[in-house]
Image (tube, rainbow, N blue to C red):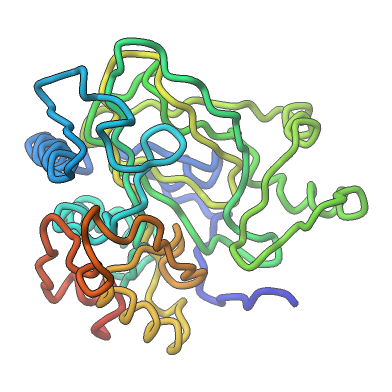
Length: 325
């Protein structure tokens, strides 16, 4: 069954004369200085404090503890989604940054936004090259949806250069997605679309885009930059080969009008329960409950496992879908 189509998606065929043109043409854009430098230092400090709050022995001043054995469980090179980290106070502080919200308000043409309950990525130098994970090029929006309906974001807190790991995009792939799925509809021999809008590409399918002029591009950014990319753009992640810190928070905002009433109700309940979801703010609210409890906690204590509870400001409650605009 086709996904519902929102009638008020952005017209990405227009010329706007600003960073939106680059986003629509290439599938991604780096917005400079979206977050003040001193705030970047604040978020890195909070990430360190969060790691040190676990009883695994991590000590930022002792590099010998910068190993998996001393860190909470994480996936794919520093991505943290467990222990309800999505609702830590510093995560919500970052989502409330004026420069970040302003960018998404400009993109969607509304100040009535929802935000995703997504995780963070904090990679510490290990003294040796990290093992590279297998690339997983994918998109996060089904072609059954018409128009741009999800734009993902990275709030970047530390300098991120060519060797520092991070986001890779297939530059220019966005506009070719309709043609790809039309021409490959009979040759794809695996489940194409599940409920999560996710589709992963095989090596031969990646070459199809490269043969049409697309190229894989590592997105670099300075501390305080905001990276946006269209969920219809092929993308994946790579781990650092340098000895620098990578510190980012993933955050996506979409108009509150995109959400069904029952989805808003569900989203508000998940906020109360401090449960994370997916990149999508207004749909695909599949819950993230891995490592929901800190070591030694029982079920009743699980919802109290946050290092610092978020401040439930009016803005945060609206972004969370808890309070209507």
